[in-house]
Length: 402
Image (tube, rainbow, N blue to C red):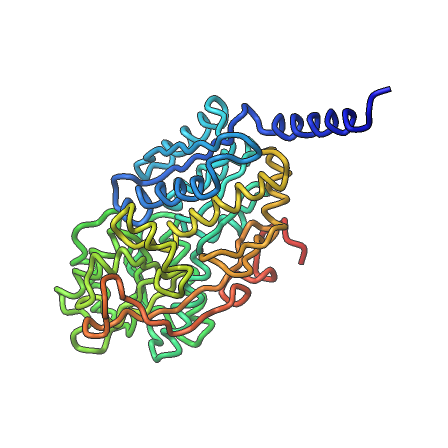
């Protein structure tokens, strides 16, 4: 008869082997499909890739004793490239999860592939609320922000401040369309009116004709339903054009990142009202992490980049809790484990995949109010996640029990 200690040791060894065996291919491989060279490179790109690697390094580089690897590809803002690479990663390269896809059109293409392949996909870069609305899946998570929360927070605040009539400059693709639609609903619900819109191609360099339409509308608010380089160019052009000089028209950036404010400069950006999920200078925890990030990138992080770090960490914690990288087991843990870090307090992933957390309404400081580099925002309001994001009653997601 074997000694009891030998039996226990053997049982522990089997348990350990089973745990390790649950990690497919002996490695946990994470992919990012980003814009590394186009108009969203500054707000995703190298910064998001760095944030993901920081999360892996801070986790120890391993989970359940197995190495964690990161692969990054530039999808060039093309949905077909993103979808083909996702399919290749899942079928051939044994990628376990894709933890960000920059821009909404490529994200929706990858979402469909992930659903077909039963693989986890998490988004912090794209904005379209469809990810957790009519296109929700059991394998997808929308993490940092979405068009509903941005419009719900910024547009409502602008109408309450007297901006009753609106005209939109809208990027002519999935993200711009849904952001305009969300903001229009909020404006109408708040007692305002939308007078019109002008759609512009992605990566527009000349906004003159669109700004002329906005000026001719005499709308009190010109809402920018675009992002990245398009938003920066539109605001710079509006300043040169003198659009807001008379004081009768104001601009609202429905998706503005701190990188955009840095590129525009406080002299031009001052007074803009915007919504973000994160600001580097909010508290000691955000400052500590952001300074480590700055040491690597030489820029302060935005909400999408901070969201990538948080979501990669949450994914690895969930793999650890699940005892392996099998999709359903990991997703179950992702939806049950709370998220408490510098990015979110008491965050939670709802059944539709929406990560619920506070959003923040900011105003861009005047140059004389800024005391040090990247000191750009003053907090106007904190909006709880339950108030900021689409309520269950409005959602078309079949995963939600209403």
